[in-house]
Image 1: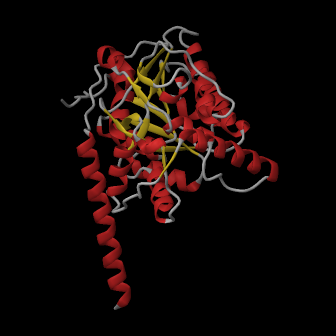
Image 2: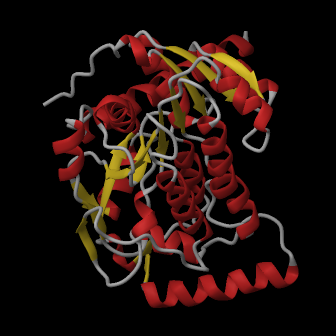
Image 3: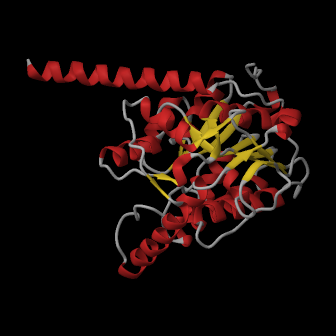
Length: 354
């Protein structure tokens, strides 16, 4: 069943988007434009300006820590889609807090100060509830938010969501909603490049055999949920969204790698050993102030190393959400994009040889 999203009502046709030059944000802008919205998007570099303009939005030069640019971007808008986030598997807690916690706080304060702006819909993360006990299967929104010292990304996203939802109702006709996707994927996903490089370099191993269950969310399904939340979501609420299916880590990642013609070897490391190795590497990176990221981190292990699936019954019931893009269709689109890329490279090489 495909979700049908109607053109938005007249009072909600103008939006401000953060993270518009990224994987999710650029798809969201394109969908908004297609649905008849007028879109302004925050951009903090010339490259980001070009990207959001190419997607069809009006660029607003600035950053999450710049109140003036946020106010300028929100002026005349009725909805904010807060998509920007700092997502890495390694880094100082301060860097995550600056973007994911304080950035969200700045968005909320600017939105509250903007007349006519009625709703902030933010991309949170399913990982905000990752904790104990294990395994965590078919989890719903009743679980409490979790903050773990070894998981600065998910912890900062949890704190950011707390700030967002606490602002609901702080003034008349002002509502905030959080959408929580698990593993986001689709054609153009930036994380796939890193996985491909790791496999080709011979450094890839499955954690715990790779049989742990996981939920996924295609980028188009996430964008659908964001739009549905504008007029159907309840203020102050969070919603899990996914592809409506689960698979094992091995089946999901192998399928994604296969769209690039890459097959990982069937090598595995037990979770307890991987956890110990990640702790040692993390301590070494901090003590020696090494550049880059450790090959394995405890943040990464918490995200993919244990079974974790989400229940989307609340989103189905309240948002009218139903995954539009199936896993098979999404893979086919990725395969097609990969083949077009290979064909373009072949033609370029042939032309250069002439």
